[in-house]
Every structure is written in C-alpha cells, then in structure tokens.
Image (cartoon, rainbow, N blue to C red):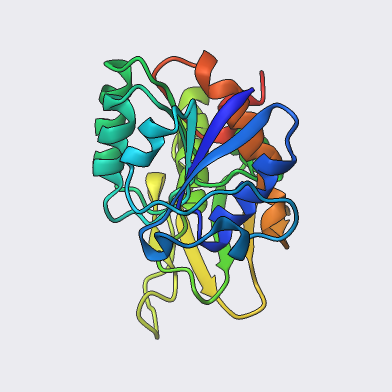
Length: 269
C-alpha cells in the first residue's frame, strides 16, 4: 500500500487528487498539506469517505507521516524550495504545478539525479493530452506549419499554459530529429493589434491563449501543408480527467530514476 501525501490539498486540483487517492485500492492518503487551510479537518474539504486527518501547514508533516509519494498541485511560487525538500528527504514526487520556469526544471533534473527519490513533473496529467502530444510528434515532420491554441478557465494565472509550451517543445524536437528542417516562416509583416499573432514558442511556433468562464483545459494544434490542414484537439471538461494520469504517475514514479518530464514518457513506446 502506497502512503500518499498531497500538497495543495485544499485547492481544486488538490481536493480532486485526495478523493482519487481515497478511491484507489493500492493507496492510502496519510497526509494533506496546505498553508491556506492549516488545521482544518479534511472532512470539511472532501465529499464521501475521508480519513480522519487535519490539514498541515508545513512539509515536515510529510516526513512525520512517512509518506512514500507526494503529489504537488500548488503554485509555481516556492516550487524550488518544495523540490529541494522532496529530494532532500528522499520522497518521490509527482508534480502538476503549472508555470515552472525552465531554469527550475533543469535544477530539478540535477536534484533528483543526486537523490534517492524520483520525480515526475507534467504540465498536464490527462492521458488524452499526452496522446495529443504523441500524435503531434508523428505529424510534425510531414507538415509545413503549425500553430497552437490553448483555452483555459478565467482563473488560470499563467499564459501560455505549460501544456502548450510542452507541446511546442515536442513538436520542435520531432521536427529537428526527423531532419525535415524548419517550418515555413511567418509571412505576416503588418499587425493592426499588438500580439495578434500570439507568442513565439520553440522553433518560432505561434502559441495563442484564451481565458474565458465556462472553459476548463483545452488545446488545439493546427498543422498546415499544401492543400490541407490537420487539427488535433483535446478537451478536459472536468478535473477528474486528470486523475487516471496522476494515479499512473504515482504508481510508476518509484521505478523511474531521476526526473521524468511529461506523462507521455510513462505511457510506453
């Protein structure tokens, strides 16, 4: 039985993770950490059967509870300190925090290479989103251009999403690995509104962000070549869509040395 701690347990994703862990036959929720809800009884935050736990305000509670794996769905602010703690205390980490800077990701790679603990960090834990990236990697060498549109709820703080940036990185890498050369350059020379063409991601791939009430997490990748387009889209309508991927990562993190980036890496060849 895996002993699980959840950091950011009072947040929307954190509560969903806690409930998913509770329903898993091979896991036990033994610790919940959230500075905003410290001291609050977990039964006040979750629906259904809930362990008799009070929310803790600090990471040391993870050690006291002898946690095997921590699931972290908090803000990017302070992520470096949390990763230091997980690696330093030998606790495997599954991290879904969005907006982690590239420099922090590189530091995390070294941290977990030097630690007894492993980590899986993914911008999106929906299995469908990981498959979208895989399909994009297949398409990249055969198309002449691509643009990414990511759409999220109005409360999302960062733009573009980590998922969109990860998608652009994988498309750029697939293009380079295939020897297909760069995509055709953007022909736009006149823009009547600032940033109307979106931001430039890896390999100058254009990334566009939409923030609206009613959305949750959505991504559309549009490839184009002579006489045709290919659109690959994934939609998450509920936070439960991320839970199969989170639980898969929790089960596998102990067998994957160092740092694994992205859910696709654990889906198999």
